[in-house]
Amino acid sequence: MKTYRNIKEIGASRPAAGKFIGAILIVALMMGLAGTADATGLANARATAMGGAYTSLAKGSDGTYFNPANLGFSALQQNGVQIVGVGVAISNNSFSLDDYNSYTGATLSQSDKDELLGKIPTEGLKVRADAEASVFGVSMANFAVSISAIAATEINLGRAPLELLLNGNTLADTIDLNGMYGEGYGLGAVNFSYGQRIYKNVDRQLSIGGTFKYLKGFGYEEVTEMNGEAVTLATGFEGAGSLVSRTATGGAGYALDLGASLQISRNYTVGVSLFNFLSSIKWDKDTEEHRFQFNFDTLTVVNMGDDDLITSSDTTVEIGSFNSSLPSTIKVGLAKTNGKLLWAVDWEQGFRTAPGSSTTPRISSGAEYRLLSFLPLRAGFALGGKPGTTFSGGMGFDLSLFYLDFAVASMNAISGASGKGLNFAVNTGLRF
Image (tube, rainbow, N blue to C red; front, side, top):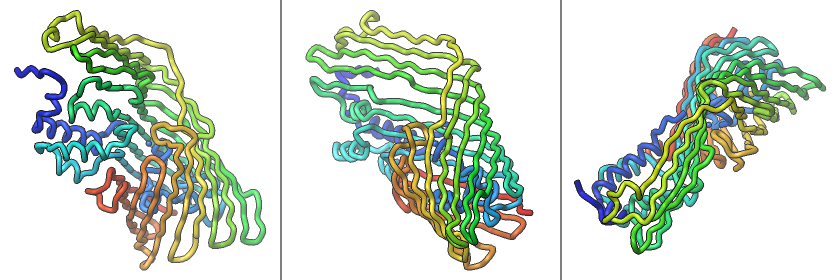
């Protein structure tokens, strides 16, 4: 067994570093930790293909996830059943699939390491995964009911530990663990939506609506505290830190969405949706707190075998029930709703940073063109928010009574290999 004289030798082991960075890239690109606001609407392929700009275009049961007020307009009502829909989005803020193919398992030069570290922002490597499955939805006139399952996770790995693993340490280095975090949840939802027109003057109409969601919690984990640092001294290393998290495997709660839509004319509609205006989830099954602490004092190559120099504790205790809430988000959209060519533009703003939500505004745009009445072609573009720049596209088969939609989106690049994340969606249903 090889003993390293200092941490720097670990970073200097180039084949090992190449394998390790491959593991980091796998985590960044493919991590399936199971947030679009809490992943709602991710399983709608038409919306995904149009960049998420769907607030003023959503019809029928789609209004449940994008704007329930649309159910108040006869032009946007759609009697039918959504059979199934699935959507998955995985992304990170640093690496692409091309990076993974280039660096995993390779012998890394110093310029390679510098290039990789240059891709990681100051706030660290962020990985997020969103997923949604809609297993049933039905809409009749002003009403819609649907059942779905959603999951959202976000973690942040600090830049300093990654830099240490690639380059090693120098004298008086401080490796700071502060600012790293993680949170994730899985929920089932039964959604009840209603929209009502409250004003009409020729073609101008105003509608309001709401969606009540009964939520069943499947799992929750949150890092509530993470801090620590290690310092390189002339005589060795010193460090201390702690991590506290809480978990649960079951709970229940509710959420309420509100919406309003104004049909300006037969061809144009503007809408606004407030997601999770009210929400609360009480986690009360297998609720636990996990606490890990470590401390080492003047650790050197000579004394690193002494048991009393490194102390750590790992404890798990049962705790009482606790509450969490879903992040609130507002969307405003304008859309052209008639003709062979439809288009839409949305602006989205989150009220707090959480899995699936960001306080950074996001602007989405999309278009749908029907060269043939049964073959809609779609494309979209969005920027801002957590996903960043997104290019999307898709198509559908619309046979009047039956429809099938597909979509794919790439984050930060048109090519999936060059992007920093991918989003896939497919859904199908029947119309009466």
